[in-house]
Amino acid sequence: MKRKEKYNNNRGAALISVMIAVTFITIVASALLYMAYMNYTMKAVSVQSKRNFYETEGYLQGVTVKLQDNVANLSSGTTTYLATFKDGADNYDCKKLLALKYPSVAADASSTAASASIEIDGDTITLKRGSGAAYTVAPMNGDPTSKTQVHTFKGVTIVQETPEGLTNNIKTDIVYYVTEDSASADAGGVGEFSMMVDGKLYSSGGGFSFISLYGNNFISDTIEPGEALPDGSTNNTGKTIPGYGAINLTDNDKVNIAGKYCVVYGDIVLNDKSCLTVTNGNLCVYGDIILKGQSTLICSGKIYMVGEALTEYGRTNPTRIIAEDGNLNKHLYPAGLTTQNITIANFNSLASELKYNDNVSGNDGFLFQILEEHGKALTGDNELFPEDITNGCNTSTTKYGMTYGWQVFKDSVGNGSDFDNKLTFAIVPLTVRDTSVNSTILSKSDVTYDTQHGFSLKKIGPEAFKKLNLNSSDPNALNCSISVNVNGTNYNNLNVSAGDFFKDDCDIIVNRILGYAVNGEGGGTPIVLSSLKFENWVKDSE
Figure 1 (spheres, rainbow, N blue to C red):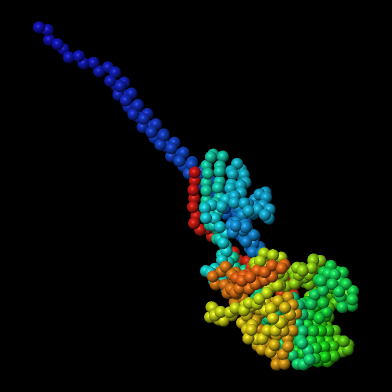
Figure 2 (figure 1 turned 45 degrees about the horizontal axis):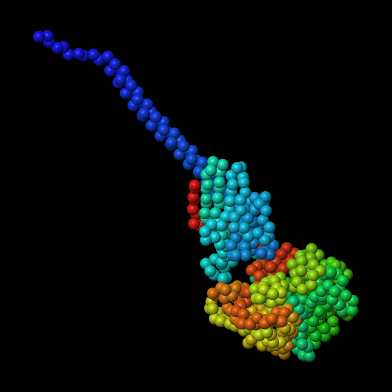
């Protein structure tokens, strides 16, 4: 029997081994290459995303920095700049915000856009109001006396759409802290006034009357375009010119100017044995000081007068101190008293602020510039508070450790107890009698002082005014109910506060006008210190 032999042939085994190894290496290499490619792609996407994100952040920063520059460069103080971006729904206008950085984005005054877009280098940039969007402003920590206002733009969203199809969103709240201060000695605003009178100050005559004014004062005698002049001719200058008796004293009457600033638009006339003393601060007269009889002008402060003729305002001679008898030193103490000059440019700045130079009647005077125009806070109709009040208002309270209040006078005589520690609106010619009070009187009519024992008028004070100047919607406001008749329609039981009648920047306007009256630079022009921060920052890439 033949024996079987085992077949043993290994040819091809090496080739198979090599093929297996090559396949394995190819798989591993492919996997590594794929992983490297994916890592590269992810890094590229990450880099692009970060680039887009920071570009988007840059757009947001650009808008905010531009906005901050505009706030910091405020010079006029006519309206808080940030508030101009508020629309009618207590929100903010995105088109105006975007237009700050990119002027090619047209934003007219009536714009209330909820979103606005612009294309830059192929990217579409959209600024829009996100969820919960709103514009709010409030004093720091809710303190009504704080000089710092907190402006918050809530829900600001910047959307960037790239040519690659990426979309980046940045959502944030932009918060501005704006602190306003004066570039020079601060006049203190409305609360530092004893009297702010778009009318004359004079005594009732017939005896000895004495009044001391310890706060700032504005007193005016004006002749509007088309009105008659004392000589029977007509004011054809097209301007509201200084009158001829802003302060008029007779008999033995005396007025003591003791505040920091007293501005008189019109002549000061001293008759008989009357006396005007300037014991402190600065008296600025846009007219002449005329000394008659045995009258006396005593000054230990400074008197400012225009050193040139106000030809455009009907004054052909430089305003000056005039003695009717020609013996000036007889009436002056100290003898040889000199005055400080106010330039024409200085005067024109003040006249412009008070709308005395615009050939328009009914819009000029101090009160018109600081009260809400046409009383819109009260009724929305075309009347300027406080005309046509049909019932008075007298309210006070003890808050913040002091008793204070505000009132509207519809009666002709106010005794001291009526308006001590009060912000007082006089809607008819007001007569004040012998007493000593803390009060700031605002009147569109003449004020007469009638006293045999002396009347001392101080001021409500800037801190009290800030608290009284809260809108009636504020829970801390001191409100009362008044009624008003506008164009024959009665509005009854209106819940108002003193703050309903003032413009937001009334103190800035006051300080600036007083600054023009003394140094021509608008001493109350604010320095605006602003800072910003982002809150509730969220990044979202798609």
